[in-house]
Length: 330
Image (tube, rainbow, N blue to C red):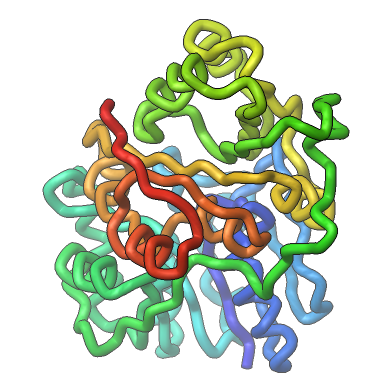
């Protein structure tokens, strides 16, 4: 089977779940064409199976939609050999157009839920229309499946549950010392890794300010996906205790190095605080559940998690004793 996957965000190697799904399709003998917008700032080669082709486009619309040719003129004929079209998040609109043109099935993989009450109609209407004749959809847990069905008017019987997670367990013994070595920390220091954005919806100010009350033998390591921005460096300087925090100087494109980096932490921190400023950081964050990539990555590498109350994922953390849950005051 030939599968076409349209992914507007383009950060395949920073989405272990999507990368794993594409790898599994290739290993099962299917041919995958992965289409996204070109982003010079990140790694965008394909996964290991030779059956996967990556096509990078230079002409996305400002809202992330695609025009699927280099010239900017839609040419459906180039997709004629595919048997299934999968749209990731807002890629579903173009996926539906292609699928309907050729009379083939199309499906949605939802990592984000754009609620109708929070999303401008000109962006939400095409998404709803694209979902009216889906073959199937993917959400992460029961709550997100219900919310996705209401937001996009999808038949609940069509939704598969696949929690955000990479493939396999990657913890190791003895524990690697990557963080201690990179930041010249002595053996008695415990490391708490915060991987991700420092935007308001993450509760970053609470986390950074909390370092003033941390014990001397704990160090917060902040690692942003694509490296630190000047604004976030200044935020850290202004809010955090300078002797309790270190900033990772760059992103990590090598998956082996990234695994070693995460696995070497003593604790993984995940904080989410919806701000309702737009459709990305409102109810989509409020109902994060099993869609948290950073929590999945910590647990995959055997790192216990400290998180605020986040729904089903925090229920599982408590049930398995996989970390601790705290109150996020602001």
